[in-house]
Amino acid sequence: MEGLVFLKDPKVQELIKALLDGTIERLEPAYSIEKGQHFPLLEELLDLSSEETNDLLERLVLTGVLTEKTTGTILKCPTCESTVLRPINTCPRCGSTNYERGTLVEHYICGNVGFDQHFKQGSDYICTRCGELLTLKDLGRNWIIPGKWHRCRDCHLFFEIQRTQPLAVCVLCGHNFDIREAVLEEAKTYILDPLVLEDLMSATGVTEPLLKMLEKEGAKTEMPARIIGKSGMLHHFSFAFTKDRDPEAFVGAGDIVIRAAPITGNEFFNHLSKFLDIEATQRFFVIAGAKLDEDARSLAESYITWRGPIVKVVEEQNLTKAIQKLNKAIKSALQEEPERKESELEVLESMLRKMKGDKAK
Ligand SMILES: [Zn+2]
Ligand SMILES: [Zn+2]
Ligand SMILES: [Zn+2]
Image 1: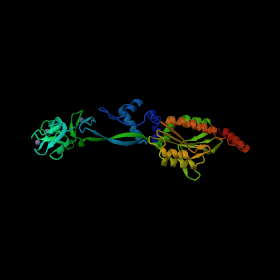
Image 2: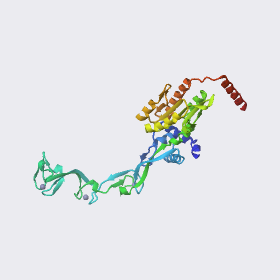
Image 3: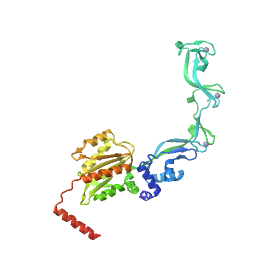
Image 4: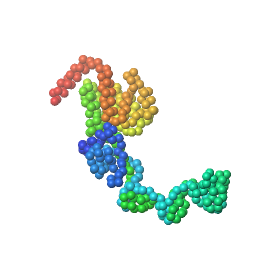
């Protein structure tokens, strides 16, 4: 897979590591006049230019490491493609941008229309054309207040903004255009694809301390792992480990999930049913970035044996911290694990195996 070779690029590793350990939480773009959509945090971290960073992100999407998500639309000037646009409203009759806003008053009887500050005299309203006193009792009958309107200072037309054309002026080149003719660009954010998580974890060394500890404890680790359940079904786990003296039986298994949205009860149930189908005595569910929601938590707490919960849940802000916590949890679980009584025959067998192994080297 091309992606795996690509992962060896030090810049790529740095980026992925920053995403996994939470240095960079989200790849959301910023905007600037010169660069348009760009990723300043990432540029700084990787010491790359905006173009190089954008190229890198695109390559990561092509190789399936990152998933691209369109989150909005950016309007650009049709002439120079600048994103720095200033909205303008113009008088629908003469096109002037010179207008004022006020609360409109209309006197039906004489047809007079104007802004309220001209009608108000103390607490009363008096028509500026016919001089009639406009009482609140008569409001809605022979005079009305239609609301906020605009008045062109050049041709004196009263108008509503929603009746005007949606115009913008480009701050860079001064081009004046209908906003519906703007060039559209997709606003993008990038998300780490959970499916490539295992590859990433080993490629970036996040899981190194965990693997070392397991090795020290005499356990062998598979990452990712496939385990056939009691039902005969094949299950996938993020990791599983066996003890040297019994390489056939898994001692523990776990799933690692990294994401921002909480784990729902339904999702947790799917993990739980996998865990219940396997023989392993240690089961871990690791979530980095988010937490279990209420349903998932009560589900996790309801499956308890005399040894404790069926699944030990590790929740952390970022993957590096989660792995550290998992490391501790597995270590203490392994040390608690009651040593199985080995028969003399088993001891002999393992000695023989060891001798054969030594000779093979
Ligand atoms: Zn422009
Ligand atoms: Zn009047
Ligand atoms: Zn006008």
